[in-house]
Each structure stands twice: as C-alpha cells, then as structure tokens.
Length: 420
Image 1 (cartoon, rainbow, N blue to C red):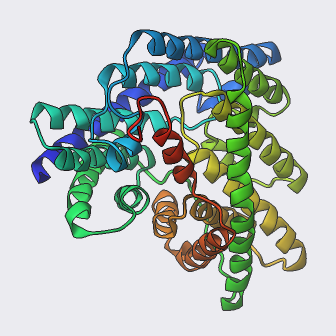
Image 2: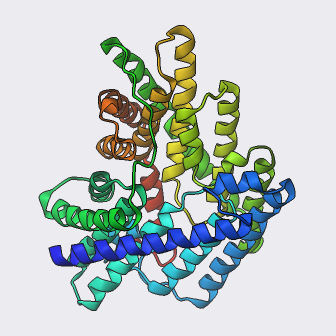
Image 3: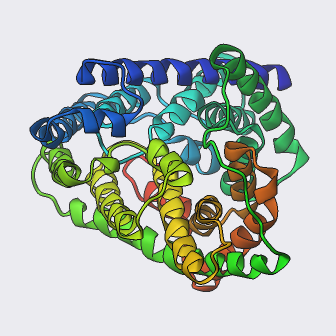
C-alpha cells in the first residue's frame, strides 16, 4: 500500500505539472508574450478581447461537456470526493479527460474558477487506474484514490501537510493512522517531485507579520466571527447561482457561454476577476490598496465566480474562496487601521484567507496548516488559529453546510451517481 501510495504521488505531481505547463503555454499564446497569470493576461488584452474570450471559451467548454454526455456512457463517480466517500473508488478515464479538457478551455479563457480542481481530479483518476490495474478491492481502491487526490493537492498548493489533512478531515471526516500514513507517503512523494522539478517557494510571499500586542488576538477573533457570518451567505450565493442556471432550457454550450459573458462584461472594468486570483492576493499583501477598490473587486469577483461555477464550468472554488477571504480580511484590517494605526492590514488579509476557508469548509485544522504552508509564516500561527477556530464555530452555529457537503449532496442525486 505504501509503495503504491508513493507511486501515485509521483504520477499525480507529474500530471499536475503537465496541466500547468499547458495553461502557461495558452496564456503566452493568447497574450502574444509571456504572461504571469490570468490577471496579467487580462490587463494585456484590449477590452473587446477581454469581453469575448470568456464567451468563446465557455462555448467550447460547454460543447465538450455536451458531447461527452451524449457519447460517453457514465462510468464510476463524477469526481474524486464521490469516489472516495460514496463510491467504490472507480473514476472513469474518458469522462475525466473530457471534463479536464473542458476545464482547460474555461480556465485559459478567463473563467473565474480555480485551476486546481481539475488537476486534483486527474491525479485521483490516475490512482484509480493504478488500483484497478492491480485488481484491488473497493476499500483499498478508495484509499489509493485518496492518495492520488492528496498528491494533486500537495503539488498544486505546495502544502504537503495540509494536502493530507484535507482528505482526512473533509472527505473521511476524521484523522486516523490507518488512512493518514499512506496519505502522508503520497504527499511526501509528490512534494519531493515538485520541489526538484519546479523549485517551489511559498505560494503567497508574505511581508513580516506584525503582531503588535497580545490583546490584538481579540481583533483576530472578531475577524473569525465576521468570516463565520459571511461564509454561509457566500456559499448560498454560489448554490443560488447553480439553481438559477439549472433552469436554463437551451443547450449546455450556450449556458456556459452565458456564464462567460457575465465574466467578460465584468472584466472590462475589473480584469482582476479572471482566474483564481493568486496575483491579486499577493498584490493585496504587498501594495497599498484603497478600501473602495478592494470592496469593488471583492463584489465583482463574487459575481464572476458565481457565474462561472453556476453555469457549469468545470473548476474549483477553493482558491477563489482564499481570494474572498484575503479581500474580506483586508477590508477588516483597513477599518481597524483607521482606529488602531499599529494594525497591519496585510496580516489581517492573510488571516482572513484562513478564517473564511475554515468557515466555508468546516475544516479548521486543515485551514490553519494550509495558510501556514502557503505563506511559510510561523508568526501568523497564533492569530490564524484563533480566527480559523472562531470562523468554524460561528458558521457551524449558524447551521450552514460546508461547501463540500453541498457538492456531495448534489452527487448523491445525480444520474448515475453513487447515491442512486
């Protein structure tokens, strides 16, 4: 089992790097010069290309999904979470490749979704293929798929500890040695490969974390309360968009094109909504932003993400949630800075990422370690722990479900899903 976990860890990391290289090639092709992320690409394009590219990309992505539904019979689970928690560990090759190609088209054309979800799905699918080739029983096959998902998460976020805990805490619902040991092996193997080949550094380059006074922990607890209140509303907006688009009576390709049109219209004035938002978050941490600008970008990013995700574009909402948390924390820190000048706005932006992630996923331990590994800032740990736990407690007390509970509930009722 441990040897197989290490093997799928290597395969999963290589698959994510190949997908990433394809995205970077397309960004260079569209921008006619090397682009540093989707926001940089959006800034380099004239307004009419910024408007039309998400529409064309959405139409192509929808046409691929529509073709796959008509020509590829459903095999196994719809995604890796379903395969691990509800299914038998079976993830179909052709369906996954079709959905990944659709995601590739959406992401490279500016959809406001995360590129990480399709990468993790491919890594999990490769693990499923390996387990079926070895004719493993369902229980061991599910665990191997979990190892593949862990490898994908580790490779895309450069977070080996949080990658393993994500699967344990969110998918399995508990942390036990029987599952955690092979997950850690897969995570270590994936991280070794990515570090050797890509020389990864921190995802978010954080300035010095300024924790002015022990009393400041109470202000971070206040940020956790705010995140816990906002998270259910944020998830309800995403799910409301899905319900709205589910009433669409036209072809699927036209529905995704409509979602792309919303993104395109917004990006004419706010190009920051393209992609997963890594570059914007790093800018929030290092450059001065007016609070009015942050507030407008936050609202527009929420609308763009709702349109992309709700229309059916294949991609993740994990990284856009980090974007929302950083903007929310920045606004909170700006308000506090006006009263307490010693308050560091960038510090609240970093803690805001973890607080909203914890409140949205109901996984505080994973959220704490995820932000720590993505920033490599040990000084942030104490306020991060306080805000993440408080965010989870408030969101849980308000009765909201986690973003992945909604996803699994949809899969139980999906045609051909494991819940049938």
